[in-house]
Amino acid sequence: MKFLKKLKKMHKSNKLYLAKYLPVEGEIKEGMKYILTKSLGLGAYKEGYIGTAAIDFTKEAQEDQGGKILKLFLCSRDIQVGDKVFEILADKSIGEEFEWTEEIHKHNHQFIEDGDVFKVIGEISPEATWVKEGDEFAEDEVDIYDVSHLPMSVCHIKCPTCKYFH
Image (cartoon, rainbow, N blue to C red; front, top):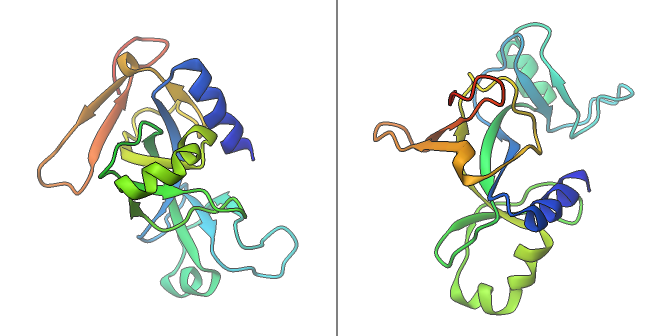
C-alpha cells in the first residue's frame, strides 16, 4: 500500500521517476539487501521478508530459503504502447513483465493513473547511496546511460548535497 500511495503522490507532484527495489538473480553476499521467496516458519521470516545479509549465503542456504537479491531500479509511470511493464498485484507483489499494447491501453488506462503499472528504466548506480525505495525524481535529477554491453540502462541520480550525479 505504501508503494501505491507513493505512486499516486508522484502523479500529483509531476515527478517522472521513482526508486523501486526489484528481485534479481545472483548470489547473496554480506551487506546485500534480499527478499525471501519462501516462508521459513520462524516468526518474522515469512515469504516477502526483506533484510540485509549479515553473512554470505551459501548456495544451498539461498535455495532452501528462496532468497533473491534486491537492487534499486529507476522506474516510471510514463507508459506508452509497446513498453514492457510490470503490474502490482492485489497481494502487493509484482507480477510478470508484459507488453503494454493498444488493446490493453484502451481498456485499462486507469491502471496507470491508479499507480498499478510501472516500467523499469534501469538500475540505479550503487554510488547513489542516499537513494531509498519510493524516492521520486524529476527529469533534471536523473542521468540515464545506455551501455551497449549491459542488458539495461545505468541510472545516475543527482545528489542533493553535492549536486553531482552518482
